[in-house]
Image (cartoon, rainbow, N blue to C red; front, side, top):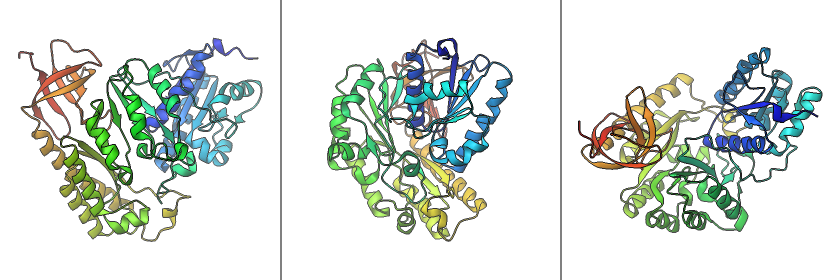
Length: 444
């Protein structure tokens, strides 16, 4: 038997924050077995690459990452383990070809990690995809800065958008039990900001309890003394009912921020995407949210160049952005993915046109976002300190309308600021994405 306690393990996590949580849970399995974890690639003997496979570009990045790091096998690296979405969906194609990898594990196979690794040490390459129990893992080795963390409350998806591979990679929507999630959240320790993630957090509980349970879960979660605030990502528009809106409004621990992936504005495009509702419903929802929660910050994502998107559709999408006045948005060119219904649709848009449309959408939103930020100049904001930006020679943090990695930041001067603490920052200027200021008692 191989003595893995004498091996050093490392991990590279690609893709989304949900993948990050999976990586953290795998690291907990490794750590609880008495093994050492390191971020020094020159010292790693077992390297794990947790992959994304949502888009062709993500699959390409995953394969290139494995190939690049296989070069370290000429030094200390002994084994390369590939986990996550790529082997889960594409193991038949990639396992025979990606010979640099020694072990393949799917998204539900982490309980088989050491068994598969042992077999690779005593024999040939091993494909262990589909052998695991998909058991819930509460323990984590958190890889975010110590003051915030992600909590994945469900896996999979039932929405069946025609462009999306997630249901065929992750399967049906599966909510994790409330008691398990509360235990996981408690074991994270003191957290300034806990960010809830799933493909659709608003659908939480329907499969497990027969009814929506996000409100109930939020009420139980925000009782925990170690959780200072909770942020919701990926809330689907058709699931934002009056009860949930009221809970977001009235619960002081819930950050007044929602990321609602709308994907388009035009009814015909949305119908081909198999998305819920349409333009008017979306505008009414935005109006309703702002009426009930006046200070709410709204973010969304949109796809440009979906099959048969006309110039009129695109211009109407630009007009929708101007009318909706969202705080921040992400825009993506449609990616034609095999094994999705949209792959077969007629009217595929040339890549150059898609790229041009994405660029134009960013320009529209840039103007909107800048004007919104300009209104913050001269005001004082409560800012969570994320640390120091050494290039700008100042502290950096986020206001409530800024989620990590996807939104802008607040750069500020202060005599001293501690990561994870809140500061009152007087905003003095802005650009299109970020704010700049100083702590109120800081003298220039």
